[in-house]
Length: 188
Image (cartoon, rainbow, N blue to C red; front, side):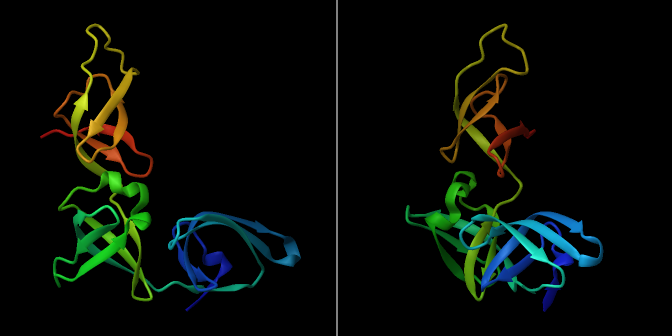
């Protein structure tokens, strides 16, 4: 299916030269009689690179046939991550470089979305926020109750993030997977 350049709104998937992309940012300029120009920032779904592109007038793009599948994370052996479709029990081996920094947010048994293009897994979509347990953090200094004071906390997956001073070892916290920041303490 062909897409007009004016359909390239934020989040739209399309392919360019056989590579699937997602629109990250969209800006359209109308040029009077000359038509319009669309400036977009796009992210490659295969390697994660972000590009700036300009499309003119009546250019047509091909929509990307990307399918999503909810899968369960099984384990990692260092070089690859293994996932399983819970309905068909089909297993998928994903190279570690494709998972990238997302590895720090994955626990065994977590549900994530795998994206497929031409029958090949191209991307692991993490949930926006994940609950993770704090395995180590320094105790807060008595009297230091300002909410702007932060400290390092090591989480159950091995990553370290900055958290407010009141967070203790054993707390369950919500972490934003897009930037690795603390969101809130999860109530049990």
